[in-house]
Length: 163
Image (spheres, helix red, strand yellow):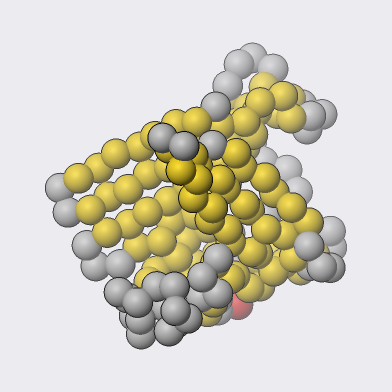
């Protein structure tokens, strides 16, 4: 699996993921529209790779803190993802899925921590998500990365970790 965070037009970045299984590649992407208030990051829009947009209420979006202690976490936003008739996804057209984008900071070693960004999309009987964790030191230098893909569908739960 290859994951990249790519800057876009002002106020946008994309998360691109290419997962290759048995020689077959599948690319997924979502794009995040953000604002910077007093240099803090706040999400104001979301578009997935199928061009489905999310409604994010101002009250459901908070800024990432400038600093955080080990063991802290929070939602960056919660919203509703609107499945459109875009010729790609025909099963769920017209439905609304719940969407949560969150962060957490956990201890990794005595001198490093894992800063994790997660997104979860859920409907009545299924939820899928990714958790991207960046290993950082006290100066904020990234020294490692892992991504976890998770699925919950009725009685099936699994996670696959890529490092």
